[in-house]
Image (cartoon, rainbow, N blue to C red):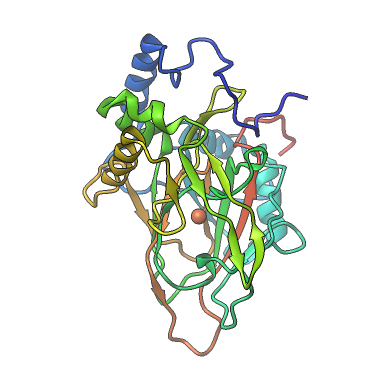
Amino acid sequence: MMTSSVYTAAIAVANNPFDLNADAAYSAWRQGKLDSAPAGSGVFVLALDNAARLSTTERNAVFDRLERTNMVVYELKDPASQSKPLILQLGRQLGLERLDSNLCADEDGITTLRVVDKRREGEYVPYTNKRLNWHTDGYYNRPDEQIRGVILHCVQPADEGGENAFMDHEIAYLQLRDENPDYIRALMEADAMVVPANIQNGREIRPEQGGPVFSVDSGGKLHMRYSARARNIVWKNDPATQAAAECLLDLFQADSPYIFRHRLEAGQGVISNNALHCRTEFKHDSDADQGRLLYRARYFDRVANVDCDG
Ligand SMILES: [Fe+2]
C-alpha cells in the first residue's frame, strides 16, 4: 500500500512546487497561495450545525479554508453536543482516520489536555499552563508516524489567556524560499533537526529522533516538523542550517500578516493539517471547576475530501 506517512527521499510528483528544481511550478503555486491566503484578516469561524453530520456546504467550507490556510476554526452551534466521540466523527468525515495513540492519549486515542497538579513521568509542557512556543505537533515522532492532521477542541477555556496563534506552514516555506532557496535545501536534509532522547530518571521515554524540517509526502503535499524551543532541539551544525533556523524564527514576528491569533471558546475547535502554532500562558482562578479543558486528536492523515454519507 502506498503510504504518505514516511518522508519521501525524492519528490514523487512531477512539477511539484516544493521541488527546488521546479521553478515554474513554484512560481505558479506561490502566486496562487499569496492570492488566496487571507493575510491580515481576523480569524474566520465556521459555524457547524451538527458536527456529526456535516452538510455539503460545511464540508466544502472546511476544505476551502484548509486549502488556503491549512487550518480552520469551527464552532458548534450546540456546545452541549461536544464530546470525544463527536470529535472522532467530525474527523472521519474529513478523511481523518488513523489516530496517533501516543503515550499521553486516552484509550480512545484522544488526548485530554488539562493542567495536572502531579506531573507524570516524562510529562510534556501541554499539561501545564505555561506558554508554548511555535511548533508543529509530533515533531519528535518517528518518520513513519508523522502527524499530518489535528483537531483541537475546546471544552472549556481558561479564565485568562491560553490564546493560540497559527501560521500556515506552506507560507513559512514560501517566505523562507523567497529569502534564500538554500535555506529550504538545508531544512529538507534528513539530519537538519534532531530531537534528543527524552530520558527521565535514567529511563528512556522516547528515543532520539532526527529528520528534516520540510518534507513532501507521496501525494506531493508539504509536511513540516518543527519546534522553536531552544532547549531540546539540536540543529545541524552547518552555516546554512543555522541561518535557516534563525530565519524561521524571524517569521514569527508580532506584526506578521500571516499569523492568526484566536482564543478558543467553549464549543470551538481547530481543524488543521498540522500547521505551525503556539499558545500563550493561561490562568484559571475559579475553584468551582477544573479549568481549561481541551480534547486533542492527532492523525497520521491529512484532511482529505473523502466519500462520505453525511
Ligand atoms: Fe501543538
